[in-house]
Image (spheres, rainbow over the protein chains, first blue to last red):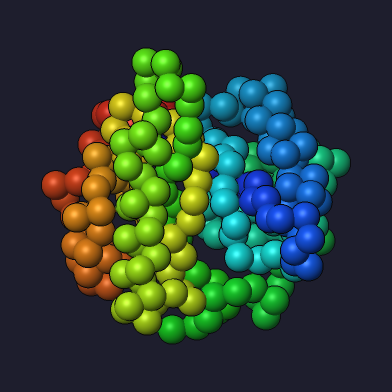
Length: 112
Length: 112
C-alpha cells in the first residue's frame, strides 16, 4: 500500500503576540518539527512516516501539540527533547509515550 | 471518546511563485478549506470533524490535495465545488468519493 505508515502533524500555528492563548510556534513547535524531520531521516523512515506542518489543532492549552495518525494519539507540551522517545517508542515500537499523551477529557472534540 | 471523529487536512502550502511545482494555495486550496469549514459548521459537525490547515502533504502533482483521517483517504484536484459531496458521501455517509481519490500508485510513501 503506497501510503504513509504514520503521519505526524505538528502545530505551527501563529497568533498575534498579544493573544492570551499564545500559540504553538511561540512555545517552540518549529524546533519540534525540525527534530522529527531529522530523526525520521536518520532512522530511514522519511518516505514512510511524514512529519507535517499543521495549522491550529484546536488543543491550544496543551501546546506544543502534535497528533499521530492513523491511530490519533495526541501529545501535549512536546519539546524537541521528547522527539527521540516518541519516534523510538511509538513510531518504531508501536507503544505511545504515556507521559506525554493528552488525556481524553482534556481534548477538544466530543463523543457522537 | 473525546476525539475528532474525522480530521480533514487541507494543504495550504505556498512556494515561491517561480517554483515549477506550483503549490496548493495557488491551485485554490484556501477556498477549499473555507468550504469545508462552512459545510461542517452548517451540518453541525464542527466539534467532531475538523477541517485543518496543513503544510505540504507531499502529493504536489495532485493538488489541491487533502487527506482524511483516521482512514487515510487521499483526494486530489479538489475544488470548492467538490466539498459538499465529500462531506455528505464520505464524512456523513462513510463512502469515499471515488472519482477524487488519488490512486495508491500515484501516492508518495512506499510499502513497508
